[in-house]
Length: 167
Image (tube, rainbow, N blue to C red):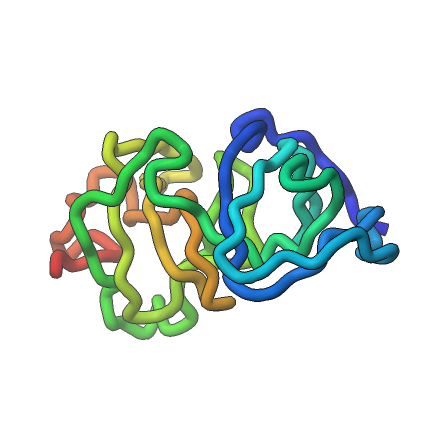
């Protein structure tokens, strides 16, 4: 059974499909309701689970969240300055991304990939690290936005102490 949570920051957020997908009747992804073409815009209810999202338009139902991509600017953020993950052994598997502090995604930017800071810039500190909100294409090849580790507190974005270099 999948744990379902309400994410208030996702209520009424817009996404588009990155391929042909089905809307399902329940969170077990059974009971096909209707099929959506690639690049179809959907509106989220804010209710999500691991790899799942409930949508309210064009029809209420459940979809595989891995088949949704974020629309630039749909969350009030727009893509800003680009950075590349530093090519070092510690980052050979990329970075884990977080929806919000303490809420990890099942995805993150891959090794040596490019991320774009959000405008306005958004960050927080936790466990001795600085986390910055970025747009990225995840290891699952899905466009997303989330928080990733910039580096330890006191690190400077783009400097040797950071997980990123400017492009």
